[in-house]
Amino acid sequence: MITIQGKGVSAGVGIGPLYFYQRAQATLPRYTVEDTDAEWHRFKGAQTGAIEQLGELAEKARAEAGDDAALLFETHQMMAEDLDYEEAIEQRITEQKMNAEAAIADTADQFAAMFEAMEDTYMQARAADVRDVSRRLLDILSGTVAGGIASDVPVVLAADDLAPSETIQMDKTKILGFITAGGSGSSHTAILARTLGIPAIVGVGAALKADYAGREVIVDGSTGNIVIDPDDMTRDRLMKKREEALRLQRLLETLKGQPNITKDGKTVRVYCNIASPEDVHAVQVNDGGGIGLFRSEFLYLNCDDFPGEDQQFEAYKQVLADMEDKEVIIRTLDIGADKKIGYFGLPQEENPALGMRALRICLTRPEIFRTQLRALYRASALGKLGIMFPMVTSVWEVREAKRICEEVRRELKAEGVPYSEDVKLGIMIETPAAVMVSDRLAKEVDFFSVGTNDLTQYTLACDRQNNDLGRFYDPHHPAVVRMLKLVADNAHKNGIWVGICGELAADLTMTETFLAIGIDELSVSPRAVLPLRNAVRMTDTRETSPRILAALADEYPAH
Ligand code: PEP
Ligand code: MG
Image (tube, rainbow, N blue to C red; front, top):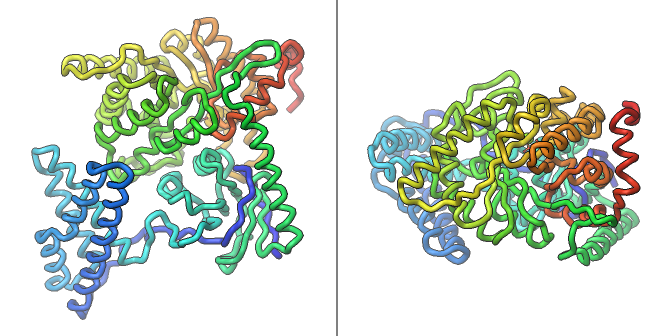
């Protein structure tokens, strides 16, 4: 039995075989071939495999979502066997003696450029299809598995680190737990694990060795403990712990349908954070009161090219329709920092967390912003939508964003496209600058939502991605808590509501504090809803608030 200690970032006990994530090859092999016949056959084999895969995907899509959903895969199937495309590859292999991978990649570039140069927007969009089909062929040739998991049985997944774009694309039904060598508790991969309720442990460093692959492993996401080849006693102990957690969960289930009300009658809205329309199911199961943060950038991370207006509209529409008349707050894209996407073509930055990200991208490249806003406003006709802008530092940014929203609304009106006149506009408070001008910002918007993950990072000058910084990254720091109070006071003075959507919102040691400073909404991962409801219902603010407010004013425990 081998024991390894990491940092638990998503609670729960997972048990299964250990599996190392297979990352797609970063570099394309490029070499001259002697036997061009054999190389051509390599290509033909990959082509047959791709056509088979696409046929299966089309059938699955048809069964789950109808003919329209199947069409995309059928189009890709046709493209994979398109004669012009095939001939261009053949010519590169037989005449230029290129290896199949290089021939496919160059042909993909050639065809994509040709499509992009066309006038017709439908034909322009085919560029993404040819790239997608070509990537599938390359993956087959390199043995890379879509989603990075080539296992028929569910596994505990290990990796050096996982980018948010990798995590979102995985088949989650195959994952019993995550272990990463790097990573931190407030990284987006940890946040996704919590949303999905999958136990996760980060920061195990070099202790996890490749030769443990395939062996039985138990991860305990609450303690950060990993056991490889557990003995019977350890297995029994951890299985009991799992059952105990399930028993507690069943007890919490009795709170479904109950209000989030304190013993003395104060209420707080408990909403959920999601990253994709599929997460809405977990919101419903856990009785979330609404969606306080839909991280819309995950739609972009899940694509090989900019998702178009219609594609985004469908995703937002689905979330609003599934949530019926409940409030849904969708954050405009927060790309940049750890969430990088190749097709955005952003330059390398020395300090990406301080660089071109989120609203800064939207205001610099308004065409990207407009597409998203058009999709959002179109979807607003179907539910109760709020739009929220991330990474705000100044009043002028908010005014400019609002001006673009106004232009989009006018455009839709002129086109006769329906949208709601009652879309609420809010901002995330996640920079110290936004906190310090929150009195002015409150006059511009309908609500605030505090992003404590970034607010802690920027206030304490402490990288949220860096696990080594450990206790220095402290969202409980009085600087952060006092900021929350200042923001709440400024919001209320100006008649708007204030929520928290950072990970701190689910921290039950902070619930009394949030109630004391008058936070109106807490947005947490779906599984945190019922524990939070329980904590709210156990609180009597007549007892807790005076003490907390006094401590905040002058005698907060020394740090
Ligand atoms: C935050 O910063 O607290 C937040 C909710 O946004 P994200 O974690 O996506 O940066
Ligand atoms: Mg943030």
